[in-house]
Structure formats: structure tokens, C-alpha cells
Image 1 (cartoon, rainbow, N blue to C red):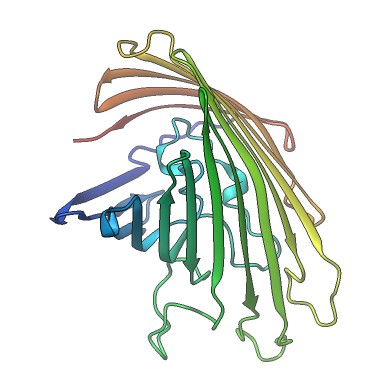
Image 2 (image 1 turned 180 degrees about the horizontal axis):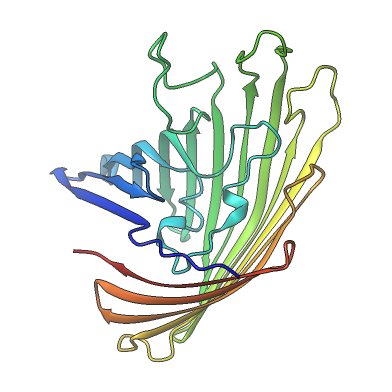
Length: 295
């Protein structure tokens, strides 16, 4: 058993507001993330109700998975792991990217979301050509969400192609990887309890960019989350049960955890977190206690 103090683990400077009517902006700067200066993550301009319709466009940096379950707003220290995974040497996952997101709300309470992103993450520009994109391909994301009594159901697909990077001329094969991520999700809630669940199925044609490889590799993930709020609108106590599961044809990606987390709201801008995560793959237990504050 080992213990460790990790405060401060994350520190952000947030800024947002209106630029003009129906035009807003938001960004934050990570001044400290696990002891390093991470830089800017979310950073975008949002155009709202374009043409007087329920049509919005967002341009900048954002998480591809934001239209589903927002990682930044989760109550647990444990992450939504399937959003972060990158099989083999792939550079693609469902977290931060640069691009455009368009959303349209139909009168039937159906939301349509479409994204076009670089697929290269949000690293610095290439020192030689100043490009933020490491190849000429673009990734496409589409989602449909339908509001139902007590919640919503949705379906997404995320696809694209990534070229092998010529990091080492001796091992460069000139190969590419075609990928497809897709799956359903559901959100159900009443006053005291909320349920979130999502299944993600990912196929990669050549995630290690190996010469002559033509066998699709499958990676599957599941997120199950229960949020408990005993006394809505006045409770200071929140509970979360979170289950993460990943299985893959590729070695080293197996992941399974059970998490039980309790938060106590000291103020609207400060909470105490107490969390226990059992790692079923490595047979380890992680106990976390800390505070989250905004001021």
C-alpha cells in the first residue's frame, strides 16, 4: 500500500461571456495538471440561433464526446475510460480536437449534431509548416438524440482515416488506419436518481500501421453511471456509482473498474470528494479524498 499527497492536482483559469448578440466564447487555461502546465483545452466561439432557428455552430477546441456525456462535468475522479483510449499507435480518441460542431434541434425534441475535426488532438503546430493537422484527412462525427419521458436516448458514429507519421524513416511503412466508433447511449432520471449508460464499439483497420496488415481490430467499451441525490434542490450530499469496462483484440487495453464516490457540498462552489475504485484487472484498490473548488 502507498499514500501520496497530490494537491493541487488540477488548477484552471476560466473565462467566458458574450461577444455580441447570440455570439459567445469560452476557454480555460490549465495552469497545473498533474504537476505540469497543460495549456489551453476547451477554447471556442459559439454562434447561437443562426437565422432565428434552433441552429448553433461552435468553432475551436472541444471534446468530440461533448454532445454525449461531458467528461469535464463528471463528479468522479475516475474517468470515462473508453473516451480516452487509443488502440495501438492510433492518435484518435473521443477527447479534445480542433474543428467545427453544428447542432440543430427539431420540433420533435430531436437533436442532430455533426462535427468535422482534424483528428490530431490539440498539440502544438508543426515546427516546419505551422500546421495543426498532422495529415490531410478529417474525421466526421454524427449524433442523434431523442428526448423521451424522464430522459433521452441517442446514437453516435465517429469515423475517419489517419496516415502513419514519418517519425523514423527506417520503420516507416506508409500505411494508414481507418477507424469507426459507434454506439448507443441512454439517460434516465427522476428527482432522486439519474442513470447514464453508453456502449462504444470501435474497429481499427491497422492501428499499429503495420505493412500488409488487413485484419480489423475490435475494441469495445461500456460506461454505466448512477447519480444519487437524496434531497433534490437542497441536498448537500451526492453519491455516484460508476462502472468502466473495456475489452480489445489488442493487448494491454483490458480495463474494468467499479467506483463508489460521495461528494458533500460545503458551498455551491466547493465540495469534498471521497471515492473508492476497485481495479478488477490489476486487483488494486484506489482510495481518493480531496476537495474541488471554484472562485
